[in-house]
View 1 (tube, protein in one colour):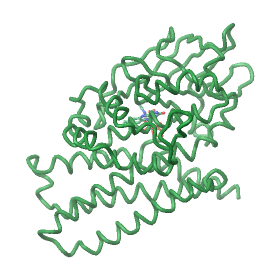
View 2 (cartoon, protein in one colour):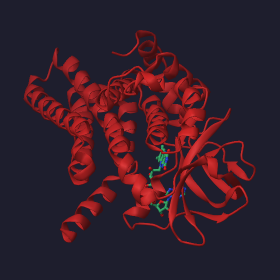
View 3 (cartoon, protein in one colour):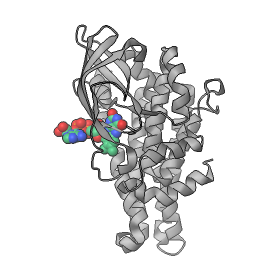
View 4 (cartoon, helix red, strand yellow):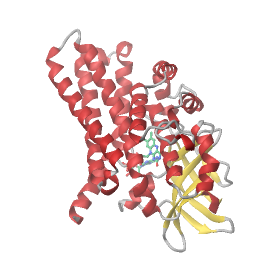
Length: 354
Ligand SMILES: Cc1cc2nc3c(=O)[nH]c(=O)nc-3n(C[C@H](O)[C@H](O)[C@H](O)COP(=O)(O)OP(=O)(O)OC[C@H]3O[C@@H](n4cnc5c(N)ncnc54)[C@H](O)[C@@H]3O)c2cc1C
């Protein structure tokens, strides 16, 4: 259950979060205050217990109110997963308390790395060995949750000498790290999304998350993708709820597709949670890829059905702003990494290998 103060704040500010009128600095503080960052993390590490499936459920609930807030939550929570999965316990001890209470923003700049392990693009950051650790050079086109008051970002780096990729956490205070102005977006504008440039950024070995990206990325993938599925689930549930409200007055012809879509969606949610809990996605990533594709389709179908249930009213700015936002939010689902195109490419590749 989501804290009612947070629910009300999200409902009141959903449009402003999407259009960028809402101060992006606030989002993480509100999420932290409602304790949503701690769900699915053991109490002895500072969490409130429960499991990853509960964290997905919570993320879906936030997404049903605001995709911007949910994506910020995804960035923060996924970064926390990296820290939890890292064997650098000193780094975990150093960062975890401030990540969990929202004082430090955690950002995940690993789209490039995910494309890299699928053979789609080269790594965009290179590291040469320095006295303390590595000097990093290169850039990332997109990263969310780059809070102006300070952040730490996870990146994949190609070692210039060995060619081997590794995963670092880089603090925003690093000299030579440059955050661009916020990118101007179709929606999700209050998400602190910007580009990063690295010019001889000297980062010590004590910021190493994992020395081998090829081992680390598959180990964090179920959390990364599972939490991301929460975005589709929340949007689909909300759009279907809106359909139900419209059908109380009119268009009963749509009752059947509403019930069919809802039942299919909840079956997939059950499958996702079961797979996250029994660990099957670690050995069968294709099953998770298929679910991510199908859930994205569910979100798109649900928003389409909301449009049909609403009719022309949806096109009037006076009545349709919630729908218009969900329409824009739905455009984000297929293009967030791993994009639907990347997933199809990966499934195709695995089929030709198997
Ligand atoms: C709102 C938002 C937030 C995001 N947050 C994150 C994040 O936190 N971490 C993360 O790692 N990734 C983030 N991404 C990136 C996302 O996950 C995908 O990698 C991105 O959408 C590109 O997907 P693609 O592979 O389909 O496109 P690509 O194949 O990468 O690009 C398609 C074409 O568009 C061009 N292009 C792509 N991006 C840009 C850009 N920014 N400026 C100019 N040209 C561009 C490419 O050069 C190419 O020609 C975010 C994207 C969006 C829209």
